[in-house]
Amino acid sequence: MAAAVARWNHVWVGTETGILKGVNLQRKQATNFTAAGQPRREEAVSVLCWGAGGESQILLGCADGTVKRFGTEEGAFQGHRRCPGGEGTFRGLAQADDSLITCVDSGILRVWRDSDKEASPDPVRLPWAGQLLELSVGPGVCRMRQDPGRPHVVATGGKENALKVWDLQGSPEPVFRAKNVRNDWLDLRVPIWDQDIQFLPGSQKLVTCTGYHQVRVYDPASPQRRPVLETTYGEYPLTAMTLTPEGNSVIVGNTHGQLAEIDLRQGRLLGCLKGLAGSVRGLQCHPSKPLLASCGLDRVLRIHRIRNPRGLEHKVYLKSQLNCLLLSGRDNWEDAPPEPPEPAELPAEDTETDELWAALEAAAAKRKLPDSEPTLGAPQSRRRKKKRPGSVSP
Image (cartoon, rainbow, N blue to C red):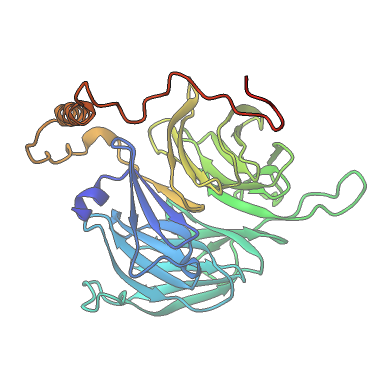
């Protein structure tokens, strides 16, 4: 039953309490999946990514330094592995061919080798046998992102840690290192705080959003290392970003729950989405449908329609603070099989009606008394006047 429930979920969400939640939007049903025992905050899920089997596997990066593997076909966890090295939580997780890529707060990026193509006989041990590569990408990392078109290429950025692009099959030096923008009008240095990164499809360009509410586009193919486009949105730090299906705009979210679509060709605001009540932690657009999934600290998963008419399609309260999400990329969400039929029994309406009539008959029989006997609890026709102190009765 768990496998049938997990297979047709549309959204997967990681929580602060270490729970992986699967949400089926057609059935309006949310299911909790935990590896073993009770959920713990020490195992908070900080990042999610699809595994080597496409959407049949999910990799979870947890706060205690473990990477767990979940099978959506089986509806169960299939193993976990410790990925030590560096300090802080995972800021990026990716699968490249037969290797796993991890990056933590302190700036240690590691590639782990998968030495065994077959399934591991030990259900609690993943087959990643050893460390293949280690890079120091600089402290204060906020995000590591993999290029979907080139799985061996990743980008990193963070607080006072400028955007860098790394080729994991090449030299240990970055293939692109961004340069900070020029000083402001007071000739003061502009601080760096890249919160999220996305690769633009069909080119080498990247787009970042910052903790100082800026959206910047970089082009490593040009000789200019500074942004080729920059715009700002709102007044609060931007925390998450995702590309729209067309790839010509991005949707950003900030710490006050505001969502906005920014055009990457002209840098102008295309529209806003409403409804969030807390800091945005996860955003992802469907690759072909005009749908946006968002989650955050208000504990609610929302699905917005981002093309006219804009609006909220689904809203699911999930009880825990939400850190990250994965949106299924399949086109036909309605393909889920119908729910199994329930055992034949009396319809609920008939059952409730019979119970109501039975209760009324029992109450009537209890209250039916002989005419000669007084009815208990009947109100008295006259009340005696209460004597006041010192008064004389007539």
